[in-house]
Length: 326
Image (cartoon, rainbow, N blue to C red; front, side, top):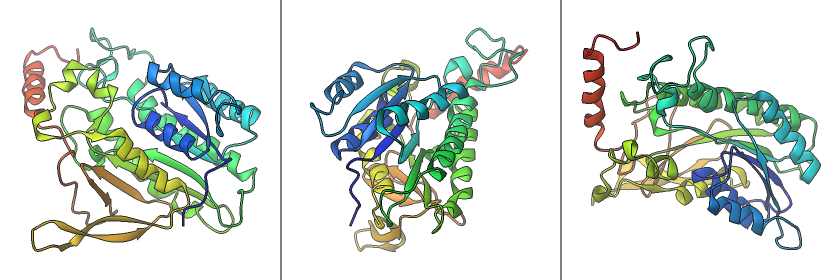
């Protein structure tokens, strides 16, 4: 049976919207305190924080900490604030991310009109946000966990990352995003041994498909790539539920089977152990374990947008100009 999350505390970066907001809501509904770490809160996130602003209003509290995840001192401040407000941290989700925005995109190099990456900075903001911030936050979380004891002999500390189907299926549109998610999935697998009897730190990840969040809905350039008639969207709440099973002490989760096929052609299911290094793909109405070796690859609706050919042609057009990257 899942362990209770009541009385525990989580830090969730990017909780101002999208998957991370859905996960924060889920935790709060299970009486787990949450520190919302983001640049700002969307109106729906503000409502959640206000509704959980005091113990008298809700069994669990929410606190907002303005945070630029590219700045390591601000990541350190998240933990200090969580300790001051709640006494410690049990769950960490370094979920803030961006999907190849024009201000930091491989196809808009430093010095190009849309880029905010400076040639003199020797860095890409996308990589800082999508890969370096989860790595540094994980370091900080491990250091904090090592200074504490789990709340019960059977419980573990948890770090849950948000990778992506892009760690397997890599569209030309988003080279920096793809690279960061490949790196993040490898990083999660590397830390699997931390869930041992001495340390009891579980590091896992979800790998969502196309999620119905503001990162897509609020960007017309991205939204045009989605064929809504095909029902490609996966809800943020679907992903959050899977994330919840990775941090609440659930021993096994049900996933689609790569071998068991029913008579009607649909996949059967199987149980997999929830343990460090586990990566669960979340596509439309389906959860699948991403294997480290000989993986069959993503499947079903919601794994990828349909209209990527549009962007590929635009990219090829840019490259023909003779001035790209100069």
